Image (cartoon, rainbow, N blue to C red; front, side, top):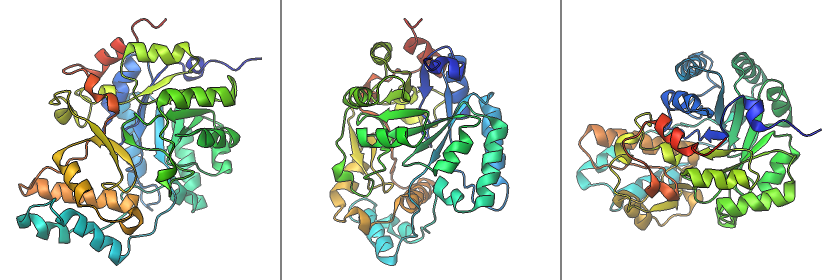
Length: 373
């Protein structure tokens, strides 16, 4: 007996999943994608479920309520637990931004930045059994359509508990990672090609990014399909998919759905629509780990060029992901408040030049689903 289609499992009309896009997507975007027949997503990376108070749980309730449905993908970051940066890493970070990136009159702002972990990993919740049980009970009460993980995976016990009430998906950037997810009980795999915007979900070789094969979405998709077969797990390619033709291409070749993010960047429901609605279509993208501490594809701007040119450090000589990204965001906010330069870190996929301007998320969804039965 063959497994039910992903459409039936999710109870949606079209096999289109919105990319979670922490810092970009909003409950309004998720609501619009759902209204268009797809599955919206809510990124939970900014929420700290290790706290002793109910702040993050209250925020989660508000996010789901604003999305208007529990038929969403709730996405967690699941990177390895990081230690707070040492003094040398902090000083190197300051030097990185001071060397030709920040105007002299704003250099004192850099010294005011305090380092804290802005993206607590799901693995940190798992270290406290009571807090893990509390979070799982909350998720069980919501019963989201999908619970997904980026940068890694939780324990097998956690996966088993979550699968009792939701589909569980993980991100893979290589065949090795896809096989690992399949062997560890995941229902579905997001295949993140090198074209994709945002943070690269590499995790098995996360401390050696130079070992990344940099597979395109199409190459990764066909490689995984060939090795996993048709019925092992649900396969969802992501990266470079911004048109109805590209959606249809993957579905025609056996994808269970596609995940799309970049196509929605200029919509009014996007938290960064102000920037993307002004793009000329000639901008390029670049993959860099210097801003957040992990490789991420973003729009190449003068700031990004300056930070890359001024860098002379190995990645391990700089603060780790959660701390580096938090410090960057604090610096960006301080500079913005004091009339400083724009140091925006605008995440986008390679096909960002195909973004439609002045259109609602629902309109984009209607375009992407045209021709789909």
